[in-house]
Length: 306
Ligand code: CP
Image 1 (cartoon, rainbow, N blue to C red):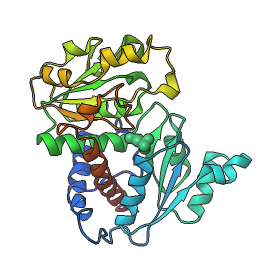
Image 2: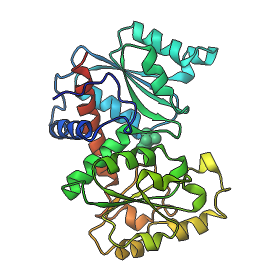
Image 3: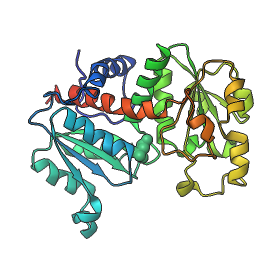
């Protein structure tokens, strides 16, 4: 079975079968990263361009490593030293890159919908590496991969997503992915950080973290996006940490073998305590490792159509 689409723009647009296909295809690529020579020829002769208009540590590096481990040629485009500073548009920039025979363009952009707009204008495959508040589909795929790896399944699990859901593209992609794969989703946060009417998606909403915890199998802590929403959505960071921070006491309250996840970067002592972040239950670095395998699997599948 192959992924019959040119681009990966969102989790909302994927079927459960397509998500399963990406996860299953990614699984054998994990072994490649454990080898002494971490390379397979799957994308030999292909060119991958990383087009990141926003800062990134994990996603950009992960796509670069994934493409190199598949033997693709990789270009990391830096907007600050390009003709973007002279006013060239995203579409014109991408069309010029495509003219140099780029097969896959990986785009991170601050505007929601940027990846979809780009995909309509280029023949190259476009992968959304995060667009505004909209979606971050490969983060959700690596989250699903990690949950399945650690818990053995996705269907029937209860997953809490905690924090600034309203500003989080990771939360939006995770919600779509988890619901499609049969998990129960609980959203936890102050009402100012939960989008109105989100229950219509089929999630449960809690403003009290302690009430949401019993029976939770997996908790995904979201980064408090201090650079985006400042301090206006809650009285103080200390109060936020008291009400919504994940501590060892809260981990105990689940009365399950809780799996702790976070997309990064983490604010230690705010949304997650040092102790929990470094505990055996935390899969934060496993998420990062799995991200390389998932991006290898995804780029391999997309290249099958080219
Ligand atoms: N998880 C994530 O998107 O991290 P970066 O912003 O470092 O890429």
